[in-house]
Length: 518
Image (cartoon, rainbow, N blue to C red; front, side, top):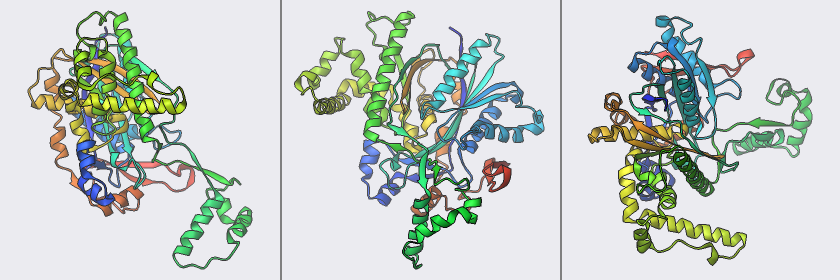
């Protein structure tokens, strides 16, 4: 086993947050369901000057400074994100530009010139893919410790205002230091994988017709009191070939539709939850088979594999997602064990497919019955003890920040380690199970072995203490930031990177410019 893994983690989250009590009041929602049912207390909200690139760059800066890294020794910096800022130019290059500004005066303008960067996108699992790839790269460098890589994760989990997913928003960036002989977590080269091409959550390029654009403008003018003449839209469309708008605007090439990208996704929440559950269960099954084949574990071993994991770290689109989803894996692994008899004595046998019609409707009814059975499992004494010991610590930070998309699994990891540090837990040499998921859909299950030096790493994080210093915002500020209508920053940037300009014309139209603010 090559001894490579995560040496340190740094995280950056916005200075602003929306309290879920205020959100519930704003939307007429039941705060009890959001808080007690889903585990939500607050959601991070990016300020005017923050985006995917600044949050990632700020996290990398924290990692470099804390570990005294020489930028010229960092050979790879891979970004996992589903909030990319460009359709061709990697967001990682913007991060590299900011880092060069900051470290160039001390280490030379070419200090990152030989660093390999790229974006990796597969919804929420992109950063796990970047980790998988970077671990392989570091391992191929041999045991001399020469290769150092950084995995960056950064996202703005943004949903439409008043949509069904709005309460699961969040934002933040982070960075993982990957090297030989890690001080935090060694990750063996054993990965369970499940991939299936589904449309549970995605961000398509949407087409907007010129007619709809003009119609919306006319409707807006009408709402503001302007008089509209019959047939005006058709006359405007006929006039377009000779118009300045056609020559210079978004329809300048004669097209009648334009493609539009939105940060807000198209999604089916219930279907996505099912895809998540199915993918993680299958990836776990794949991991378990590989563990048996490698001699890591045996079916004859009386110890259940998931109970061999001291902690279980999962992707958390909302804080209690793992609590509500993991009963499927919990049941899958235990059904052939004697301990499962106690669970069935408590809640009965699972629904049998034979009791339902062999029709599409019957399959749906069976799945509904299985969902109810899994909820019953989650309420059993055995599962509640399992969850409290192995999963609960990971959801604490998620409750306060919200969904971080690609970073949520690593936020859960930091939450677990910092909570165990405060509790003076004995983790040295223990194994963690990790379950990543990305819609579309893919899951990866892997494990990590805790280093004897984990305490010296975690002692410098102070994540929960930093969260306590954030600023709560009100409804007006939140919606203005969401719509992009807020002028200036709510909290002026200090000691961080900030977006200062998006160029509007010429050969650099759309280019984003950043600076370090002391």
